[in-house]
Amino acid sequence: MEQAQDTLLREFEEKIECGFAIEPKDRMPAGYRKHLVRQMSQHAHSEVIGMQPEGNWVTRAPSLRAKQILLAKIQDEGGHGLYLYSAAETLGVSRDELIEQLHTGKAKYSNIFNYPALSWADIGAIGWLVDGAAIVNQVSLQRTSYGPYSRAMVRICKEESFHQRQGYEIMAKMMAGTADQKAMAQDAMNRWWWPSLMMFGPHDSDSPHTGDAFKWKIKRHSNDELRQKFIDKTVQQAEVIGLTIPDKDLKWNEEKKCYDHGEINWEEFSRVIGGDGPCNKQRMEHHISVHNEGAWVREAAEAYSAKQQYSKNV
Amino acid sequence: MTADNQLDVWEVFMQSKPGANYIHAGSIHASDKQMALQNARDTYCRRGEGTSIWVVPSSAIVASNPEDNGMFFDPANDKIYRHPTFYVMPEGAKAI
Ligand SMILES: [Fe+2]
Ligand SMILES: [Fe+2]
Image 1 (cartoon, rainbow over the protein chains, first blue to last red):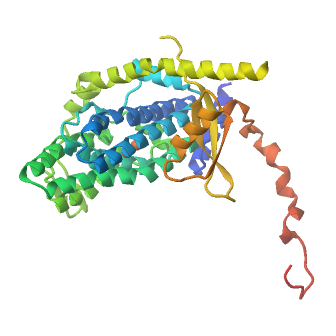
Image 2 (image 1 turned 180 degrees about the vertical axis):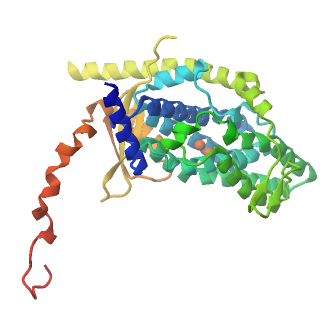
């Protein structure tokens, strides 16, 4: 028995080694499946919960153009959640279980969405920085070893560049505006910069799950590598529109050809993940109440379908 | 918490333009055919990715088992006479 398990694991790891994708019906170690369900569901929940801070500004968007863009962006995020849920479901977990895990707190979502969107400039900062950070991560995940996850990432990446550009456009417009508008944009930058860096997770030296994830090619780049990539491409974009990165230690390192950055406040990170962020309670309560209030719609749809079946049979 | 019904799972296949193959896009949840089509369009076709959609209840899909791949797909490899390069053409014959 144990020997059969060993052979199975060796075959699986050889396949991964050769760069083959793993598909739903392939045999895979329980740990691989478990890691994927956790990561993909967390990713799906993040897309869905991420609609809340932006949804907060739909009715107050400053123009019809801005409102249409924001609505389309939020709809995409809902779609991303659905791609990822459906990819996670190929591993044998049901949508119902996934949602229950979110509601009971067993499954997490990205910490960034526990921060509030206080002004219109926050919508710019979210699109530019939060989606920008997400893109760096998602581009890397396009080459993840699990086929359905990788395909969902390819689809998502195609849609993300509009998200980041619309956010950057908002920031650029505000930075070309009045002194108040500029101050608003800088304030949003100051509040979103550090949480965006935290999106990549703990430093490689203190991140507990990475061993297997790398060996099984679920993860292709480390947290610190991805964070560095994000910083290096974002600094120039900030400079072009006159925004200051709120990090006095940020400095170009000529030797390493990348930016050095200041200390990330990991204490804040674990506090917010632990439930004590500005919006944790609000985000979850909203999701649960919408889910419960929508139950009758699912019931009605089922009843209608049953009735159609019935009238076809008589 | 009682089990909540998340409706049935359907597989979505999309044709990007007339004449192209239908390609699997992913899956969606729906209670009937019409909802399945509409959800498939909203989920997988927001930017003109398709001009035609098939939806199939996931429970109706029959898939081959990867563990049988060796046996199941083997016959194709040794029948090289199925490929045009197997045949010796007379010197000088053209357009064949
Ligand atoms: Fe997204
Ligand atoms: Fe996005």
